[in-house]
Length: 121
Image (cartoon, rainbow, N blue to C red; front, side):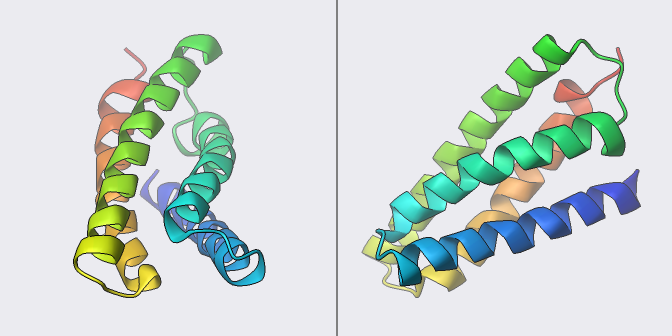
């Protein structure tokens, strides 16, 4: 399971940072908006791979999806707060702040997903 989680996380990360770069540098989106939009897009990608492959759960799809979306909502709030503080209040480059925010959200997501979202109980 750990290797699958790392693979899904790695591909999600590549997709996530690619989208942020495209939105900020290519489309001149605000960094917090770009981060939020990218988070939503990769969230669906991440859910499908974790549900079917990483955790291979037999939990009802509807229940697991609702739990996952609640977990993502929490992660989205955490991500937005870290991005806002890091970019607006501390003035650090948005990609540096995003790396830190991403690490915080990954820890949050792994813990909640293993314990609650994809639990086979």
